[in-house]
Image (cartoon, rainbow, N blue to C red; front, side, top):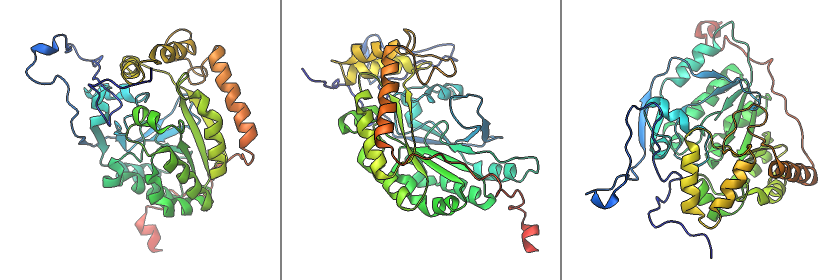
Length: 357
């Protein structure tokens, strides 16, 4: 018997339900479907919601991330990756971490203005800033709004270091800016690739670029001498962990010079979302996948402890780490460390009066 999706499956979406918002006093549930005159849940078109935040650079306190600051032009993500750890942040806005997260995209309309203001401060000391620390900065709405490109233009203007992680080929649109930033050692790009099986990707990450196109992103970046690597994340035991060697080998051939990985953890309401999804998407493997995820986190689908939450523990997690290390040693022959240039930064770049002289 092979895996087969449920008939009531929302194609093009990762989430198949809207989980309850933990901040809501009341919640809704569907118990008698046959009694309803209309569908309880509908796969609506994506809705863009403009916001005007007061701050846009976030201090990252986690030692697991590898960056001190992050910046995110969008909240919510149309890519629809079912495992996305950012889903629960949508609950702070009164939405669900489920379908709402994919359908209601919050856009930080004044982000460039705030970034310029921040970079112009004499007190600001440049540190590598991660684009996509929360949701993908090159998700579909970026093609229409272009906020990520404007952020890169601002980073180039002030000569500020920036790191990027994405699973969308739209990053190649900005290769002109990336080349200019790279010439000053101000940019590094990680491409997230979770496997090579398109049938899995279309369920796991339904609106992302194909795996083939992501490897092409690495090829194009490498040809232009833009430092890039592969992030094999998240690894879902029982689903894509066996793909680690193939992804590593293909990424290395495409020009990746660094590699990283994380094991999936289902924080907050993501646990209920993922369990519903895996039972509908891979009914024959659902129990095995779920149990192996829990095995990596002490019997739970989530682990909030720093240092272990993204790497997991136990025999399955150790086998994944070992396979990753062996694959990297075998295939990533040109692996190299990258250091951002922190000396080129100029906080006066936005001062039009100074530029006159």
